[in-house]
Image (cartoon, rainbow, N blue to C red; front, side):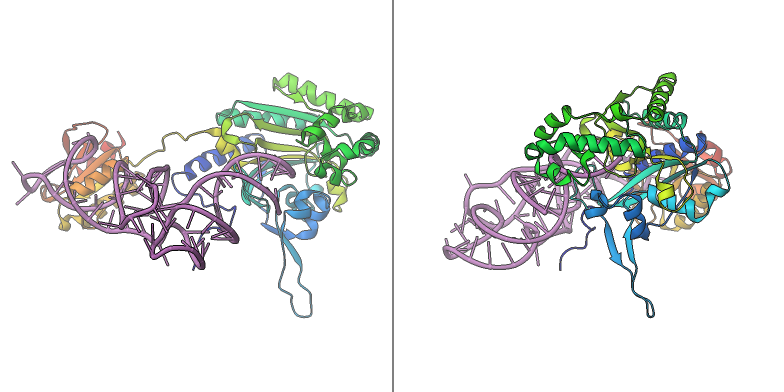
Length: 423
RNA sequence: GUGGCUGUAGCUCAGUGGUAGAGCACUGGAUUGUGGCUCCGGUGGUCGCGGGUUCAAGUCCCGUCAGUCACCCCA
């Protein structure tokens, strides 16, 4: 029988690595809350229809990457089609509508953090279960929140030491702009269809915008001469985009306008952005986070028309871009027993110290004092504390500072130990 | 889904068709109450898995699975 192991593309995160996850997650939460966002947690499983209607059936995500299954059928009922969420936005919108949040407050700011599932071929920085942290704002048409959101992201990345990034922005305009642009783009691409890559030819009628961000050289050449969305923006769309840029300028947030930035989700309107890392660790998966405005989705899913914007960032990718971890906070003390009969007293003392808030470890498997101290040293503990016959009778403990090479052993009354170990 | 590369100890990797190895890690010890450095010992392997070729396969061939990188996709 084959060895048990994780499902392809899904990974364990073990102690030693998890500390970096905590640091990232904590930085994200802290920043999001400082900006007025509150956490929302939604189920990992949703009705398949939510993603089909929310993300768009023409997208690759919905078309071929979702983990979808049929739930067990109930009495006289057929099973329902369920899907492991491939992204977070659709679920947030569903929750927003389900609990009629839009009727309770004019503007809603939510953040989320958790695993997403897409059945793609795994690669560096791309896994089948991967983690995203994201923010969503409902009820604010922008463009000021758009800029604030982007600026918040750049601030977060900087706080985490990721400074070599590129912020790309674009605008797709509203529904009417998009329709007009789509027609113009098709008019340009159709005569050149034969020259396009196979993938782009397949996408041409279904989702022509995707041809623009193809990496195939022949596609890029053709895309370079294609009409630009920005030239098709309505006056309102253009004013919105100008407002975004002016606000980013006022915030001092660097950005690049990339008219060919399109992104693979169908729901975007107007503002679109992506932050790419330039670090070598990232490989081809250099999109650290992406987002944009999706002003039409809430109405499409049955709510009253409400403007919305959001982004998601890929935790694993950000971890790659962050580089190696700082030294983790270690133990305060490692307690050792001189003789087997000292072990209960060590446990009593360990409990006292732990109750006092100290991080304390012991190793009382029955090994020698030498072995216990060797482990104390490897544990990274600041102090070694030894209890033996003499200390037991005198109510003291021998304390050694493990950071010093030939540290003297101090005999300290147990009553003063907490204080001594905090030093 | 397509292609390239890689699978040997927990980790990093050697290994000319002829007895399975090293370093690190783990563990025991080096005049009995003290760690690191050093030294000596020990545990640990279906050589990813299945076929084939051969007197003989970790080594050669085929398949398969997994990892990884790129395409693709996207965060």
